[in-house]
Image (cartoon, rainbow, N blue to C red):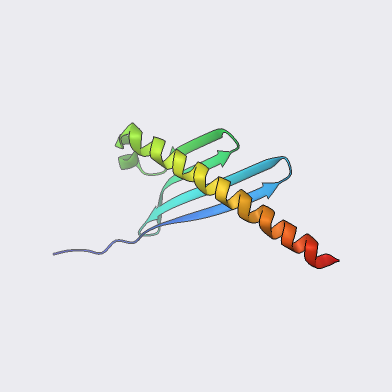
Length: 90
């Protein structure tokens, strides 16, 4: 018999003039299993589920790169929105 599992990530992007941050949190069946926090060039990864500690190093390296790319895209999107908002004020 097969059981269904729900797997999802939440990505949150924050930006100000001097700091950009992206937080990525992964869940399986509403249980957090990992968190990645990317601040500029400093990327911190942590797992919240013991089985994830056995994950291969390449997994974490790929995830760090993915979160860094998400942070860069989010920064560009936030700057676009800021520019649009400033243009609509006048």
